[in-house]
Amino acid sequence: MTKFINLLIVLTCIICSACNDYLNIPPKGSKIPTTLADFEALLRDQYTNGRTPILNALYLLNDVYLKNAQVNSPSLNRANYMWDESADRIMLNNSDEDTYYALYATISNCNLIVENAPTATEATDAERNEVIAYAKVIRSLCYDVLTNYYADTYDASTAEEKLSVPLITSANIDAPYKQVSIQYLYDFMLNDIKEAIEMGLPAQSMTAIHPNLGAGYALLARIYLQMQNYEEALRYSNLALQQNNQLYDWNSFYEEHQAAIEDPDNYDKLATPMQYDYVENYYLRYGGQSNYDSYEYNIPAERAARFEDGDARFLSRWKLKVDNNDTYYAALTSGFFNHGGLTTCEAYLIKAECQARLTTQNDFTEAMNTLNAVRATRIRPEMYRPATASTLEEALSLIRDTKDNELIFSIVPFADARRFNSEGKYLRRMTKNYNGTEYTLSPTSHLWTMPFPAGALNNPGNGTIEQNVSK
Image (tube, rainbow, N blue to C red; front, side, top):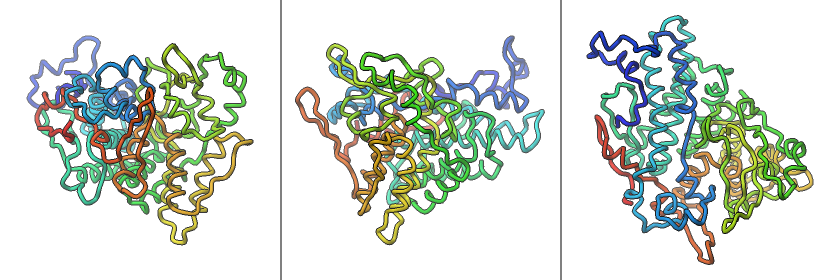
């Protein structure tokens, strides 16, 4: 487990009581953190703390295009993209370690803050609590992604018995840890976020990369929804929207750039609005991108067909492209995208699903009104018609379609699909045609849980890890 503990030796020394005095002398160019500003600076390392790479979940969903040449070569990416249940993904997972180590590196930095910021100098108690609160929310978000990637989805009937991921709460490189149950980890996340709110998670955070109070509420709503606790998910989505309920007007963006967007030969990149000042942000966190990778992913033509007609957000971000043997929708925007964070749009769509689930009169008007609040800012006026539903199945299908499209490249569509699959009533069997052959992904396939990487299993550190899938 030591590989993912992304700490400098000088940082480790301050929490290892066995360190000799001479080890506490900072090398030239280094500084041992002592002030609150020193610790808070760890949160601003966006390459370490700001990424949420989940590429193989996106390949499984076919939300990211894999070129034909890549499909023809055996790899973990291909196994997931082509829904190859015969592939030994454990064997193929010798190199796909980014998800695991990137998120645990962030967790390690958050642990360092939670452990040591209470005694940081040059700060008031309120200022210390604020920074600790940021770390707790970020840590919980990372664990939410990890458990929804490497462990089975939450099911109350099995959550106490099934294993989740290693729970590590210390930045000490030698600290023992345990691979806890799914239930234990969910309880930990909920408690951590609620503690952060009680500690004074601010309504207005330091920057967009520091989660604000709305982020805390939105993350609670996301987790409760995954647990199928619709009452609590609705309550916290409403609390999040009380903090910020703004939605970005993608129709205006489309109209501003309409000439370039509609030019079939123009693939020049447009600056994305989904950056630091995006009005929908509660907390900005990259997806797989970083400071050095500022383009969105290309998407398959079959995936593009699932967007609603007249969706200005889609039309502004992708355009059909034929490149030798590859036909796909090429990304049109550049910048730093909030694919890994928390937004008002997600809060609206969580609220809509909960309203639909909790209606007692078979009246889905409120749920559709909430859904349409989002759609009205996305769908071109000449194409827009308010969504309506007469059954729960219709309502959930409409909400899920919009949510899958709005939150593409985030963990949410993957986690939602697993949740619906587990529920059994409203699952979807995915199908596609590739070079004349039909492929199907069963809702019960083992592919819906990703295997731990070889590095984690072979170097478990001061604990043990049990693989959660057979292959």
